[in-house]
Length: 474
Picture (cartoon, rainbow, N blue to C red):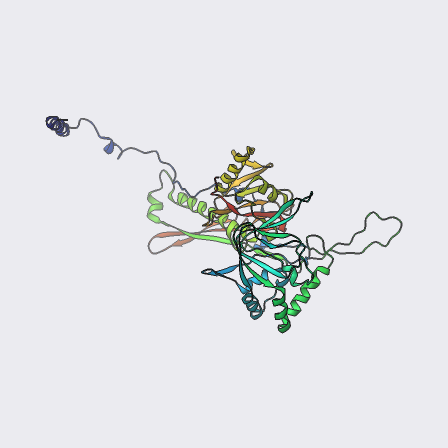
């Protein structure tokens, strides 16, 4: 473009600016117009499927007690470690998670046992313990994956289970000197482990009378008559003829049942009186402030139901109901194993990225999961069980997450939500808004409160697939 043409364009612009305005401009017109407005929007709002699908049980008195049959079985736990550089140490109190040491609280003895644990490393494919050989030590898995290998129906090798960080095996040798390895344990990845020998434990027991007495008491537990769940057996007779003596029995109850107290989430909403008085058209400011506050509380409620250490589903799932994917990514085989752990499965709950990872595994095998309509939403299913998304399930720094599978309902001995309706100033079930007054700065305060909790009625009501890799694409 020539210099002359540039100058002519500039002259035209100046002439247009200098010409008088002949009509009202849009900016000025908007001053008198009534705009069409949306209600305040909020990105934090999610579908909250857990709150919608859980059956909620009314809790009078703020506490729900779960009564169960008395059990002699000692539950399995998960061991926690401390890492300093390349050195790994077990926290002494965490040794109490081992079944033979469950309930033992002598800090000095546990500290000495922790000091006697020696660190070992294994490469992928290394055999850690071979089936049929004598078991004389406990292995604590600090990092990595270990496969528990057995024999298939035709003598072929079969991976029975996969242990991950915090797992352990060989604890039976602490109570039985003749114990042997029932299965072969093999490192699936590079593993860092601690081992505690039976000889070290017995050596300490000779000097610590409390440990010796505890191990003797634990050794007597398997002699009790129990069913496969560890509950005290109910003596019955069936298939008999004639007039035999019918066994006498009774059902024993857990003497210390667990009680769930309703948890609380609260906030104080503040609204200036001038805003509440003058700026309520076309929308009520107080109502909109309250609506968004309630949404935030409900989001926090679902987060707590999953992640709270006291009653959250992830923390309270029985360790016997936890599995690890065999190959890292959630395959249809892993989902089948998670389903098989309980009867009457009602739903899966997974992070959206975990659902996408499962979809990739289905695509790789040429499978297309069916979907069902739930409240107008198309929800994917596996074996007819819906897989609901939940962004509250955490994703670790190593890009792993968890998938939950549960049976719900009080009548089904499943997972239930707990709340109390009919509380003062209630605006939603178990949620209240209370006027707290107006301060000297003319600010109105409202106390917004939600009460809730969750209970797992029997251990197999909830299962969790842990260490699910969501970043694998190959």
